[in-house]
Length: 350
Image: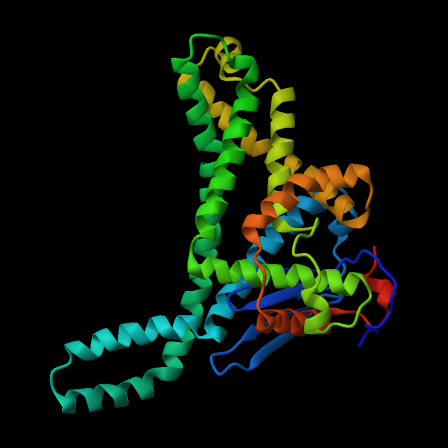
């Protein structure tokens, strides 16, 4: 295990993600997840990440590929943490209670219980396959919802504004859509922060950030040491998404993507012009994600006036997506990060 009592402050490549009653951490060579089980013990799972991918050395390309890869892994481990934490079991228990109410005879109950026991291995296989299918469907739906919320909807709203405003606002179309996107994003985060389940998830998010900060400051990973650090980290998924939205405003403002351009040059209707505008935005999205990834990496790696400016808006929004964690949540984050710290501390530094 890596030394934890160094007093050197550094920037690390170790990162993580909040799970349901748990935390996932990713290091240079290993990944790990720690989840609080219903009996209050901690489940820890580790896996190797030593395989070097060619795209990790390709600027801009690596951003888009890593984003999709991390999105898929995120769904996978959130789903798994739900099973380990007992959240899904609670849902099944509720379903079982409803089923029992519909059973009339005690004899029938005993027979059904025996049948259930006999079918358990088969059901587990079916459930595993079903969970995989649901995870894929959820990923696709999640991407579709994001595209609808942050590309299609702002375009439709801006079109409506353009229709009712007498002045010509077409030169500012991308800026207006960008402001709408950011407003939708912040509104979405605020609404989710009001949900009890999401509040706990955001507390684990805070625990993840605090633990990484403690490690970066070279302190021993204890609950007491971790607790004193801030919960806002420049290399965070929330900051990355906000930065992607901000970069999209700049890119789409520089590109001639107004519906009028398509109407004048291709002779299409205004409705088709909006559709082509949306299609072009989707095509340019990987480029925007790639730029945002490089900027968020620089912001996490260096500390100067430029990186602070880049990080400032995302750090502010993290007030919605992170909450102060309880000590038992910090304990989970520590359990998740320890296995991924390399034997040679230099391997974890930028």
